[in-house]
Amino acid sequence: MKWSTLACAAALALAPAAANAEPPAPAAPPAAAAPAPLPDANPALWVVRDEDTTIYLFGTFHLLDSRPWFNDEIKTAFDASNELVMEAILPEDPASLQPVIMRYAVDPDGRTLSSRLTAEQNAELGRALTAVGVPATAFDRFEPWFVSMSLAVLSAQKLGISGAAGPETVLTQAAHARHMPIAELEGFELQLRLLDSMPEALQAAQLEETLKEHEEIGGKLAPMLAAWSAGDVERLVALMNEEQDADDRALHRLIFTERNANWARWIEERMARPGTVFIAVGAGHLAGEDSVQSVLAAHHVRVERVPHVGAAH
Image 1: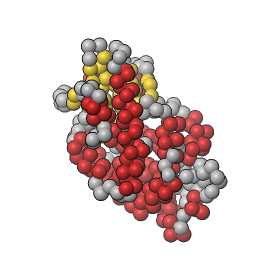
Image 2: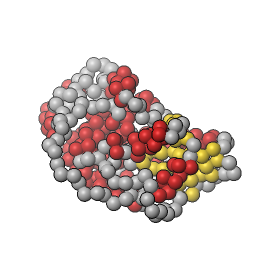
Image 3: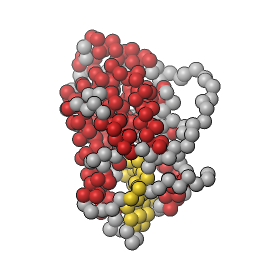
Image 4: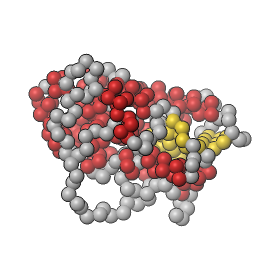
């Protein structure tokens, strides 16, 4: 398992589940000078339409920095929609998720994480958590998958990349402002159950790679953010697929392939009812040979890329 795939899975697929799981808060960093404004992003957008139904497909980057993106054709499509659909509805109070998080993220047999790791791994975990401002023993009750995802999220937050700036948060706020209905394709419990279903060996491999290379998350996320910002789907696919091994392929099937097929089926069924829908899911689901669009195309459903208009804003 390579860190590039793990980072992609964390950043593009299931990071909201980990981010909303409220890992122990890191210590507040010292005040720093305001960063320079980032250039506008122009992420990819697709559309499926017939005589009385229009469904937009927007690929998000769940953990994001402050770069502007909610403009041009993205904003136009959202404003024209009468329903927002996401992987999971963001709760107003993240603490409300704690009971279900504890159900899936805590080891059911009462094993501590430290008892499942080697002395070297325990030492590296302690160093990694200390680096993000979290006590070394904060995650000892939790499953390896939860620790891997949480460490990825906390490492990204340290770089100014977080769910607070992510499209799901922005879109949710915009939908609430106009009393727009919000629906979900899965929900957080299903996502947590999916993560918890990973075989123990795969969880261990994921955590081992996270401990080895978590400090590289900035270098791994940067090219993916650049590809997302440019709407360069081919580049995003190449980054997701580089140096895949058997563990990576198993994780890809779990996080992408099966879910993409489910979501394509949801879109086909939704096309039977009139209306305009804005669907926002992780960009990794809208890229590659098993993408949502590829599944729809195999079912003879036409999906078109919406051209970037570059309108003034």
